[in-house]
Amino acid sequence: MPHLPHDVPVLVDGDLTLRAQHLDDAPRMTQACRDPAARAWLPLPAPYEESDARDFIARIDRGRVEGTQIEWAIERGGRWVGNVGLHDRRGDTFEVGYLVHPEARGTGVCRRAVQRLAAYAFDELGVSGLAWRAARGNFASRRVAWACGFAVDGTWEVPHPVSDGGVVDGVWVGHLHAGEARAPRHPWWQPPVLDGGRFVLRPWSDDDVPRRGPDEQSARFMMGTQPSPASYTDWLLTRRERMAAGAGIYWCIVDPDLDEPLGHIALQHLGAAMTRGTGELSYWLYPSARGLGILQEALDLVIAHAFSPLTDDSGAAGLGLHRLQAGTDIDNRPSARALRRAGFRQVATERAVLARPDRSPTGALTFELLKADDRLAQNIEPAVVPTLRTARLVLRPWTVEDRPGEDVELDRASLRYMPPGAQPTYSTWDEWYHRRARQTDEGQVMWCIADARTDEALGAVTLFDRAAPVRDRAEIGYWLYPDARGHGYAGEAIDAALAHGFASPTQDGLGLIRIDADTDAENTASQKLLRERGFREWGRAHSDYTRADGSISDSIYFELLARDYEPTRS
View 1 (spheres, rainbow, N blue to C red):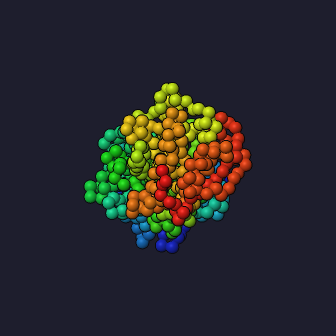
View 2: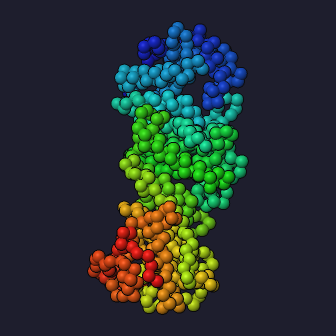
């Protein structure tokens, strides 16, 4: 069983000497213990006098004789610059403690002293481990422990007394085992300032307390991750802890002229071993900053920084990631639009996964972006649905007033030839309308076919799958309510959609080079419409189409190329 020595051995590390305490150290020790940075975290007498320093030296001498503790003075250039010591906690485990003079902070003195002491404890005393603790929030002490290889095991939820009768809630505890490297186990992220011109990304400060609590949108979608004035201090401390643990990095988005916070953007889960190299992106804006393009530019800055090479333990130049992931509530359309504009691809849709305290669980969308991806090629702007006019029809965006009447139900043709959910009814309208809104954000152009005289909704025509590998192609789909069939409306609407799809962007069109279509093999009316407009059948697939009524059918595939397109005959 290791025992502390009765005499203080001299330990040397270059220009540092660890030696026994002298009464001559009392004046400089007094200076250190009067410093506010020390008093904020340690239970020191007030006022602190030289007599207190001499009492401390006498007390540690008694502890050394009793075998319960041993303290070294850290000397550099013939001057006392700090203390470092060991306290017997379990026979084969000692706790390390340290204090440095203000003039020595930030010079590496404390780190070198602890590393030298750890070498002595493990190699000469034969202890199995060293323990460390500090008041929660004492990042100066934690940084020394981190630099020396200590792991932080968690927070002990007990009051920690400090000077002047104060108390800090919580104590960090950690360890370093014999045989472990005496160097950082993980990065300690520090958000560098990223300048976007119109705004700046910088670390959050103690003074960035919000004026009011989260608004309704933030409360709904952020679920407590945006702070209120009352929760800000603990919110900020938690994020600083996560950066110290290598788990995340957090920026405040600010107006550079006013230094006024506009919002928040972060990369999290950076320390997960199974997904090393992946960061999870999260963000929010205060209401006054929304709709100004700020988030889009912030995403560009963070993406560039995330994929830049990692050169140090702080991430100052970059994080060296190869993949970013982000998730949104399925109803948070602005968030999903921002990700698609930034080049993220939607890779999953989850149902009823996000728990809500005041409503039913909601779905979620998952997006990813790889460093190797071509962001420009795969970014998706929300579709602009222009209004198109024909002799009898208006093709326009759908509105909430277009809900079908209670008497509108799916007839036999709808059930037989359309996929489930394609055509709304009175009872399915809300879910259908919101789904179509999300599909518009994904780049689909879906028109409501309306009567030009009454503006009554007659059906729909859509150009979709525009985010497929060939960006300048689309697939066309269409349907009419039963009462609107037999009047030639479908062909008239298809003609308008084709003209818009093939028109060049300079003519306010989509500039497509190809439009595809597929039909149920038995839907001869739909096939006739396509052939009349120049579509060519190019293939068939057997038993690959599930109808709304649950039956299975074959599909016929058609194509129309821009070079073969001739304007409408109708």
